[in-house]
Amino acid sequence: MALATMLLVGLAAGCSGSSPQSEQSDPAQMVDSGSWYAKERWPHDGNPYETQHFVVYSDGAGSEERQRLASLAEEVYIEVIDEMGVDPATMFRFPADQEKIDLYANRYNVLWGGGARAYYAGVIIWSFDHEAGPESTNVAAVRATLKHELVHVVEALLKGRFTGNVAVSDPRRMPTWFSEGAAEALSGGSTAGKPRTVEHMNGLIDEYGPINPIAWRVDLPPSDYVLDAYPNYHYPMAQLAVEYLLDADGLDRSPKDLAAVMVEMGSDASFAEAFENHIGISQSDYESQFFALMNGYLPQSEFPFEAVALALASLLAAGVMGGSVVWGLRRASAGAGVSPESGVTVWTRRARRGFVAEVSTFASLTVGSVALALFSIGFDDLPAGANRALAYAATAGYLIGSIAIVMWGIRRWAYGSRRAYLIPPLVIVATLVLNELINQILL
Ligand SMILES: [Zn+2]
Image (cartoon, rainbow, N blue to C red):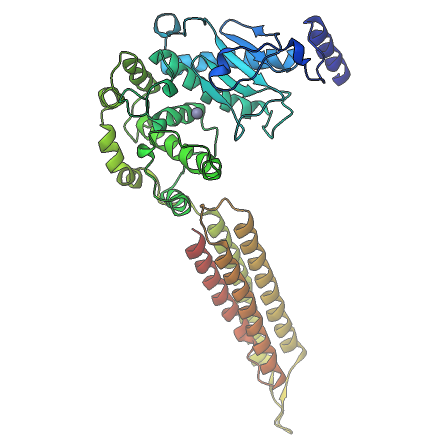
């Protein structure tokens, strides 16, 4: 079956007359022009693939991969148009020399910082056989990024110009937060994803500084900070800002209202004016109220599954240990006693068994709790900025404390005083303290 599929794919590739797929095109045959030259001066191999709304250029992607990108683009295009309620025939304003959206599928070239970029009526995005960078060619990843970029293209086509072509100081320039936020909100997020709780948002602010997303009006110059902060902070916060506008629990607008802002800007309205007209709040009010609004909108923290699991495990272990205490006490009163001749404490076999039960219950509870705590500190999706080191220290302290308790019990045993029955309740208390500490530190 797989072999037959491969043969068919090979046949289809052969029929469409592609250039060799494994070797970079001959530099002499490369064409030095294209709409993407506004962004990157990359030649193409002179072998574009055309569909109803797109022309796919490339620096050497296989024809199969070009077709795959084009048909994905057609699918995503229809989605964006439908969601935003846009009629391309009457609303789109293409550049004078273009009738379709250009896609540049880069196989060998790489954009600064990776990823994809939109421009006026075009997108540069890695091909499905991309070789030069770490981009995922998983269709879900390509789809989310392509949708993000096509929202930018729709924005430019509705305005009849690209943001970068309007001066930074010009009130008719689209602010970055709105543009990126709309693209992230409608694509479902192509970066780290919006913060879901106030604690998550505060963690991001602790890490990247208290930047109000609505104040992010202009793209920052490329830097190492941008490489880290854009996908983890700026884009997610912009996504949150626009999702709030769209959410029924927020301002309850629709993607059609976002499109209306873009259309109005096409008639030279300022962004502030268009935004207030269609969204129902002024940009300056949204900026000044942003964190207060988010505090009321986002849940404080997510349901603490890990903490509940830890508490349940502790409860179960506490039940087992409680049983062991009762059993141990009954053995002690029934079996142990003072020998009438020597006055030395004599332990019956049953009393010894009780001690063994207490020590082994201690061991399983301690080992289980430590394993659970280490697992949740190490692998859980904790809020950014959560103090893992402190949580590890608390776990280590718990382990040392529990061992101290059991050592004390054993010492008392050696002196003939049977205080081992205190081990289980003391270890239960230590486990509850650890649970509370981990909650305080991490959540
Ligand atoms: Zn973008």
